Amino acid sequence: MDPNLLTLFKLSLIFAVNMLMTRGLSDADGADQLFTQRPRLLQCNQTLLLLEMERCGERFSSDMNHVHPDDRCNLTHFIREYHVFSFCTEMNAERIGCFWPNPAVERFIISIHKHFFSNCSLEHVFLDPPDHTLTLLILVPVFLTLAMVLLVVWCSKRSDILA
Image 1 (cartoon, rainbow, N blue to C red):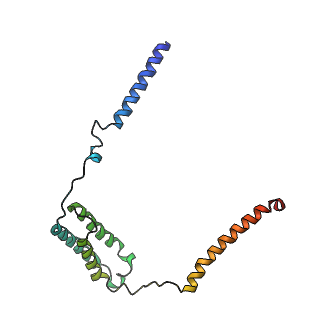
Image 2: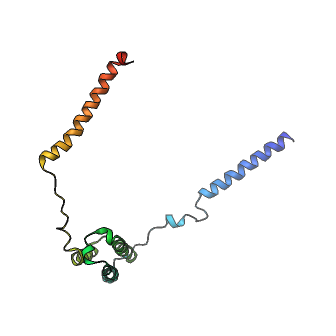
């Protein structure tokens, strides 16, 4: 094969690959226009937001009616229902053009919590351990770490005897 023809073929191949790569990276075809457009700013319609929150609350209430009242303090029994409720409030707030959470949504969520979970707060209260236990839990790992560092340093100095 002629060396000039081979060189011409290589150059045309490099040119074609370069053209395809730069075309894919450029914005001339508008493929990335979705990411470069300015976001559409919506005004928050508080009335519509509260109506949508009521819909989310009604669905959550009907879902929670299937959960036994004794199980309402155990999140594992209604985690899916609560997730759907939270997702509903977030998506509707963003669709309407409101931030999430905002004061109106927070007030609504607090009213839902007061209605369904008012008896749950005192059932499982976690207390801090006594001071002497806490001190012991902090100091034991600190001293063990120091002891390990001292042991490593001591062993590295005595490597001639241990070897």
